[in-house]
Image (tube, rainbow, N blue to C red; front, side, top):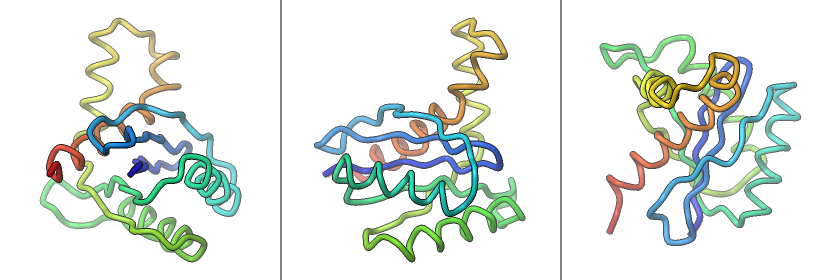
Length: 137
């Protein structure tokens, strides 16, 4: 069963995919945002191409656990996605995942310009791997 991981941002959507057994998350791509309609269509195409059965979406929360404006925007996007697909969608707390991804990329000595292109998909990988690790049977 393949699971898709999403890190939905204002300008980009990081996309990760699990292996067929649901053990390992791998970075798939970073989608440059165009419009909600176009972004949803791109994600649906990935869901169909990889026969995804579940979507895990990073939900940005404030450090005190409350939902802010960014979190509400992610939930609004997911509502649009769920209007078009009939698979399970799960929210995963994403606090600090982008910071953790950036630290990995800095430690790998990637330039700021190169980090910008991969940080979102790496954050999606962290979000998905956290979910996979917690739900391993």
